[in-house]
Amino acid sequence: MTKQIELSAGTIEYEDTGGDGPAIVLLPGLLMDASLWEDVVADLAANHRCITPTLPLGAHRQAMRADADLSPQGIARLVEELVDGLELDDVTLVGNDTGGAIVQLVAADGADRIGRIVLVSCDAFDNFPPGLTGRTIVMTGKLPPALFGLFMQQMRLRPLRRLPLAFGWLTKRGDAATARWLRPVLRQPEIRRDAVRVLRGIAAERGLMLDVAERLSSVDRPALVVWADEDRVMPPEHGRRLAELLPRGRLVEIEDSYTLIPLDQPARLAQVIGGFAGNGSAA
Image (cartoon, rainbow, N blue to C red; front, side, top):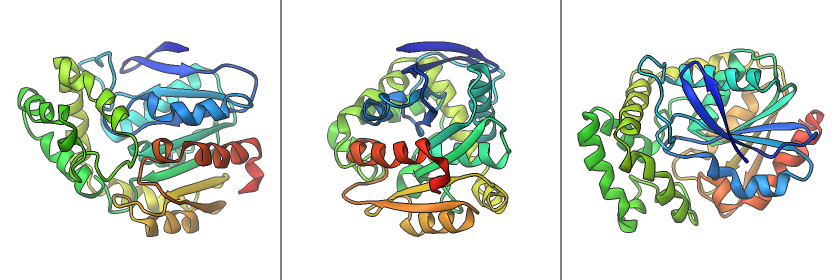
């Protein structure tokens, strides 16, 4: 069920399966909405309460306030506000793509309500913005919102969406989802303004994830790192490094997938996350 919560930056939409099971909050990446996790949640919902927010990362449908902090750190604080506002405890916080960078920021901040973390093929270390895809999109953030919108109009065409500089190296099977995620930024000027602010915030913090990595060794909570073994945007060696860096981390590699494992291998990912969230000591 789609719900809304009022946070410091504005109104955030989220999906909530409800129930009394362990809480899992799943974060999408740049220019992605909560539907990234739809198939994963379908498998998890029987035994877990799953909350999937659409963060203000360019695929949201309600514009943020003019003074909202849409930097990576600002988005991380919104996630903490969301968890506090929903009064969730012992949360398993999961993030894919840019969402994984946000999870690292939240974990490094020591958020009390987070019991365990899952990093799914995500930005890390010096790969921020990640790969050709990330660097291209962040470069477009230098444009005024109107010109940024003109650039993004090209993504209406599937052959262009499937290019490596767009979504082509992010997912093998999820083109329909990527087309849907782009609708707000293509149709709503106020969302384009938000997206440009997000992209400029990322561009201003190129060394951010290197700084965060230095703090991850003090994150003493169960941590699972899940990486696509065919990832062409997030280097597989980064998954191994993260698992070694986190004191209670372990690594699972998933075959036949690019970065967006929730689209390419949702059943396998749900199995891995479900087992971990049900028993955090497994890490």
